[in-house]
Image 1 (tube, rainbow, N blue to C red):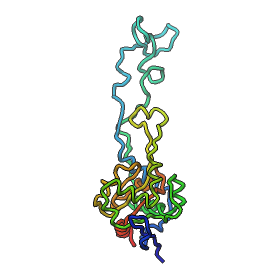
Image 2 (image 1 turned 180 degrees about the vertical axis):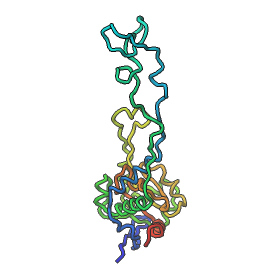
Image 3 (image 1 turned 90 degrees about the horizontal axis):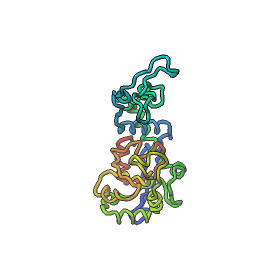
Image 4 (image 1 turned 30 degrees about the vertical axis):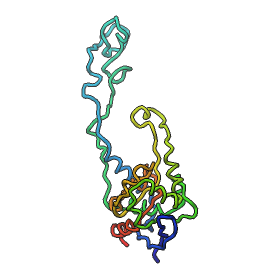
Length: 261
């Protein structure tokens, strides 16, 4: 017996039923999903390391024995602050770092192909579980079935106003408004170009882009992705599965071809 989902029209009314691909019956494996997302995140990291001579550009010399202090290299001079303090050695305050970051460090992680596909399939199945979606923090209306499936005409919407009207008719606009509230990051990161923490809202999965990417790109937290390019991080941002996802009928056909009927 095949699973079915309700197909909604652009005005939010039930249009009919559609058979879901077998991928929606995949076992929920949060461990595999987390691993696949972390691997994908590692591909965006840029290698970094310290200068080879960092902490070594100094004329400090040891005073030698007979001074009642440790025989470590010390700064020269007597008329400026810091004269006589230790330098160069990593075990002293003001010295160089003992084990600085190296550009040779392997930060590009890998994952087996079957494991990656298993993670994507499991994350897709999680989008049909209302408990998992609500536990992630999304606002899901009680009278809407998951997964949310809309007719193919949704892919042709190229204006934000039209997309917002469809979200309002499907009662998904509350979740978009939830994502519009940004939080100020705690810690030093707020001074390093990532002051705000942005939330994720609805993920729109389409079979073909006929204007919907332009129509939904300015909505806070909303992402649009082609079904053939669907990844684990799209479905589980921050390694947490259960993202509120909207599929078109064409997207389900692509998923059926990709993962089997």
